[in-house]
Image 1 (cartoon, helix red, strand yellow):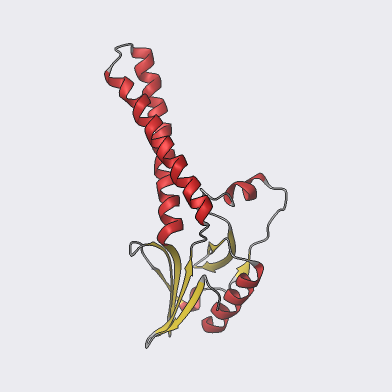
Image 2 (image 1 turned 90 degrees about the vertical axis):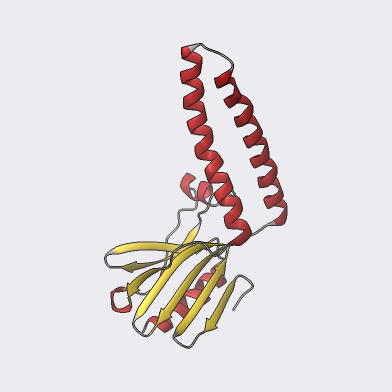
Length: 176
């Protein structure tokens, strides 16, 4: 299909893989930022063991909780950009979807009859959330969605319009 989207016909169904968006220069910048963030967090966190002021200790614990959350987010985003992919497996009677990093992740199964057709997600051009979700360090930017068992599942991270159209046609053709 495209460089990022691969389809593979298996004996029991169709496997579709969508590789994560990867930009080499942005990945290097993300790595440098993550290393600086880690160094700063460790340097500030080390002050927990030096000073005995209770107010400072409380502030440092709150800061480290904030720091740890974003440390986790940036490492996850870095790993996603390196080895992440969205996977679909469509068999005779089941539809599986999951986000996989390396070989870790879970493909969630659905009864094929409970899955509605894939559709594009409407996007607001001036929306802060759209700008934020399309930033490189965030795993976001879904362009397509399907509904299964009454719940909406967005997918198709940072796909071009051409890729969205081809993927939507491929999945909908195999859902029927």
